[in-house]
Amino acid sequence: MALVPAAPRPRVVMSPDGLPLATYDFGDPDAPAVVAVHGFASSAVLNWHASGWTRELVRAGHRVVAFDQRAHGASAKPHEPSAYSMELLVADVVAVIDTYLLDDVAYLGYSLGARVGWHVAEQLPDRVSRAVLGGIPDADPMRRVRVDQARAYIEDGTPAEDRVTAGYLTMAANVAGNDLRALVAMVEGMRDSVEPTPANAPTQPLLMAAGSDDGIRDSAVRLAAAAPHASFTEIPGRNHFNAPTSRHFREAAIAFLGPGR
Image (cartoon, rainbow, N blue to C red; front, side, top):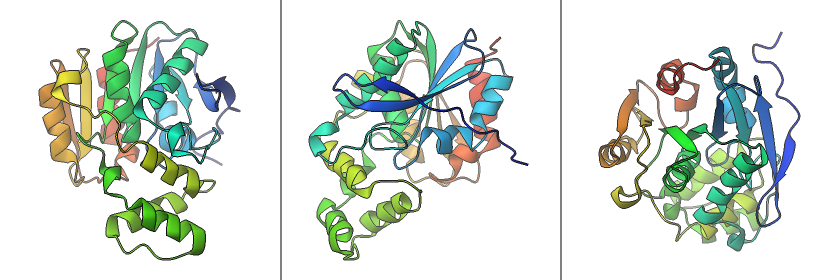
């Protein structure tokens, strides 16, 4: 018997530039909504549903609207770097919020999803009431990926000599259904995207979190200090990749989001 029930069938939302995005709706449609956005090379189901987040949030009285970011899960996976920028990823979130007719939402993001959430919250202060941002760095770690080596590996299997590049390729390849060409195109396309800074910090209440063993922990602490209404919680004994499965993280986030219905 499965501990986590099967995810609902995805519903398609069209992005502003015409890409189909797979979305998933959990819980009472009249409950306070949490928009959940996953990390790089993951998916809505893997990041939020299989790890128990949707179950616990629904039990706490929330509705969860999650979606697969472009290049991920069941959403479109274009191979052109021009299809990827922070502006486009933020616009995808806004399209999901608009299509579901949500006026007042909380935001839940991890890693890439947290970076996107920083800018969504900053740009939508009247629609995003608060945000949980886990594993968020103050710079794009994907800029360290050697795109030339990643493409060589995809094309003819040439091993990536760069350790960071090899690590990203291994991580991405270990998730069933991932399209490495699309993910490398995303890495390349987002090279010049805007980063989280004190100048663009959201003013809503924020809960920032990172694993105690995560290399970006200190940058997450700096970002929390830069935002006017942010707090930081450390996820004990976790690194960047296993922090989303932490019960400590889930409980801290649910307490921060407050009671649903």
